[in-house]
Image (tube, rainbow, N blue to C red; front, top):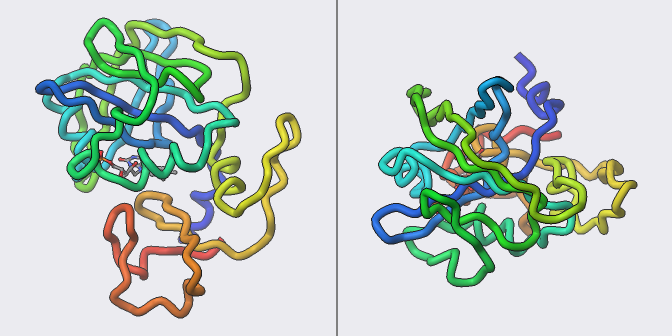
Length: 210
Ligand SMILES: Cc1cc2nc3c(=O)[nH]c(=O)nc-3n(C[C@H](O)[C@H](O)[C@H](O)COP(=O)(O)O)c2cc1C
């Protein structure tokens, strides 16, 4: 199978967030999708080892904030490359809370949804949370950030609103497990064989060139 076919799928960029046991935490996800419209349901797939995942499993609810195209890379780094185990992510940003007490983004987001987990499927490395959407509100006007926008942003490209599909052709290496895009100074080919993905710790061999 050509695993790069998976990179042709289109995703958004979201922050899944939760308050559990007095602590707020959240992480970047690209795997939030609507599954049914009446009732409104969404599926969210998350790595078991993420602190956010474990907190959501305990609490049984979460929010999903839809990031806007103008969201800065630093925000994505904060929520997507650091763990709440060693860092209190919500200390640095504006947020509001929903009726379950879960935080959602107060800035750089065009909408949020409140989700109640109804069922959990064990996918070995991940949990698939099947959720009812119980609240939802547009917070700012603007365009949603897509996964392609995020990759362009990481490559240092200035994204023009309404003209943002033009991704540079430089070869990029993407983790097939968590979709982290390698952007280090050392060329990917020259990284040592025991190098691992900084996001999900998978070996170099799971990366594919695009
Ligand atoms: C662009 C991008 C997309 C990501 N997508 C997902 C995802 O869909 N599911 C997931 O569990 N983690 C995903 N991650 C990884 C988590 O955001 C990351 O592991 C985070 O540091 C976990 O933080 P936590 O331990 O505080 O929960 C993604 C990261 C990035 C940068």
